[in-house]
Image 1 (cartoon, rainbow, N blue to C red):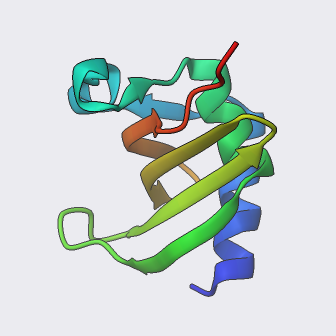
Image 2: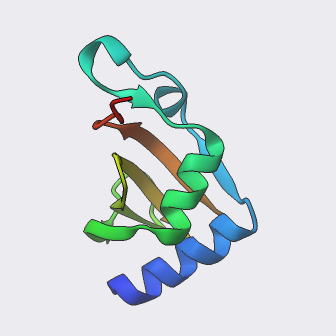
Amino acid sequence: MNGIDAKRAVRKLAEADQIAFTVHAKRRDPGRGKFPLTREQVKNCLIHGVITEGPAQDIKEPNGCKMRITRLRDQEKHEVACVLVVEKHVLIITGYEYRRSRK
């Protein structure tokens, strides 16, 4: 699967809210500079972000493509590592914000 087709499939599944989170994705360690994302932030990253790594065949999910999607906005940077299982769901492996806004 090429990047354009993968992004199109991820966007379609995210808009339909077919997103599944691993336990690791739900728990992040702010003390180490990795702040957890809300479901809405992950969804927006999947819909509006760009693929910055992959897609590549996933070894754990035979029908899956793994990739990293990044969304840059004013004062924030969100990154989501996921596996696309076409026509099923997007499995979120991890998602974090590593540049927090300073107020």
